[in-house]
Length: 64
Image (tube, rainbow, N blue to C red; front, side, top):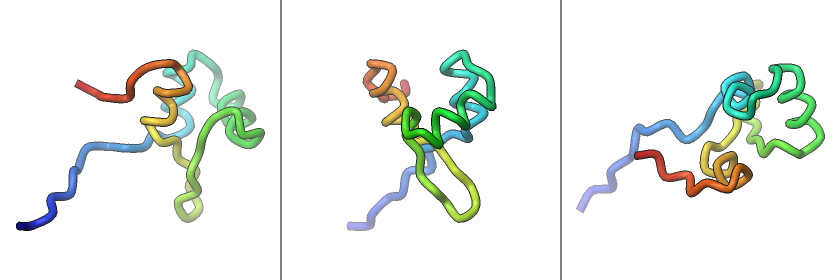
């Protein structure tokens, strides 16, 4: 049995998360820095895990 890797996106850029939250890009970065927005450091990038963002918003995180 082989393990299949899902190619479905699991993270968003902070600017994409900002659009979902309805806040400015700079506000999203302030939220990320303060810990209000869940993030993962990926090298020099900071990304937002979609599942954790959906939980924050009170949604299931299952996309379609």
